[in-house]
Image 1: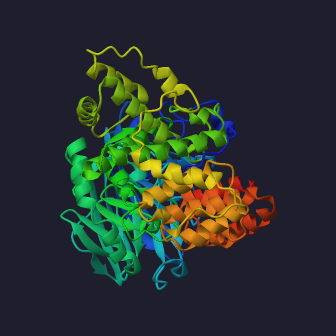
Image 2: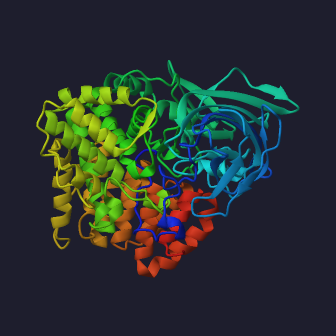
Image 3: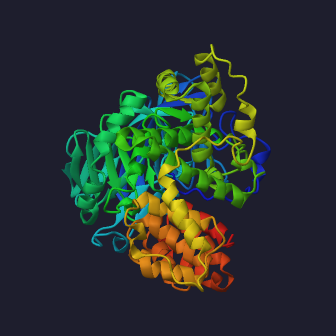
Length: 626
């Protein structure tokens, strides 16, 4: 999804009453039956209503019957007001039924006309204020504080609350859109804008086209007082004016990243690569919407040190957007490939194998913390999981990212290294271009491509189906981590009764990444004493750091050792932004400090209306509120 983002896994969710059977043969989280009647094109005609906080209008679905005997089109919906369904060609009204609401929304059944293989079905509808895909921000929650703001987040299965659709990654279709908004708003989508917007009756009508077939969760929309700066021959950065110049500086290397990705993966097929920096409540680091990556303002560190998230989203142009997991049980095919590719992009930008290894060390640490928290036997820590009766948001974690990337590193080592493995990756993207596949199709292609090699040592069942940490750890280049290890050991071993051996210059030659690693290593240790943390702040001034990744780890370090000065820092960070990667561990650490448990709950209640649905839902579980 998304860059390495909201990955704190929950204990195995309780199975819903619907878990006794899969909702459809191909996807446990979708009612749709594309094997019977499949959506092959989507045309949206929607009006943005900021007063009512809804989208209203129509979607026209081009549908192909796959079986002559099929009488109904089955779609996914959630909290939609379906008003009318018509056959566009004949104009007749079509019967429809919306089923009861469940953990994945409602089944929408539409009776199809008797005649016709290819049909155009127009659905007139309105979204609800409860739409889990849409975040409506009042002007007070924007940077400019003059206009409200709208943005969507459809992954994993939230598009159905914005558009009635076959909301499964196994279905890909191009889309076009006509979006009407108040004239002083700019509208963007995950497609290419077609000409300039036209003013009609005090509104502006925008037109968009995404000609490459995409899965529903990649349909994205944003509207606000936003402007752009050109940062490359095929890229602009967009944001509110308060962020736009900072964002243009931060992401100035976008074109270089694109070129290195093309060297690895093949031609970039999406035309443009723009970046939209959203308001702080965006719950992820980034979202790989084609033509328009969504990014969090927490990446704006001022020194480009966190821009690797953009490399991650660029990699998704091949790994996830072009070749896609058929459902979220095989999510590692999206995210494991993307993390693996992101790190190769960084190494090819002149940063070398040291940087690739350093990033992978951090990822291994995140994976270990996650699996330690959830237990080695949690079935959702396998690469291929069973999501019968499980909302994919409840199963979301770092595991498909880091365990998936580790598996690919293992395969690369097994076949003989990057020079042999990288041509395979290009062949894989070419073979499955514009398709949705599962892990076993990947396995079959891999074994066929390397048929002349003896690959009997690969235990596919263990990698795919065994929970817990991988049995194989790559030989990561640890040279950049050595200074972090040495400084961490000195702080851990220092007896505070003795003179302080540290200097404010200790971190003078540390990169931002090394500071992050140093604090990350300390988080793996028994909590430091408050005396040590107080001295660390006196010397290193971490309280004043703007880099969100450093600040996040520093706050957690303070909370774990019950350092009172960390509490206002924690409250400030969770109140100013809604990125789940930061929210959930900070809230959990505050909740686990028993004397401060009520502070955690009160802070959440004060801020929950500003968090997006997926973040608030997860935090309610973390704080034992549901």
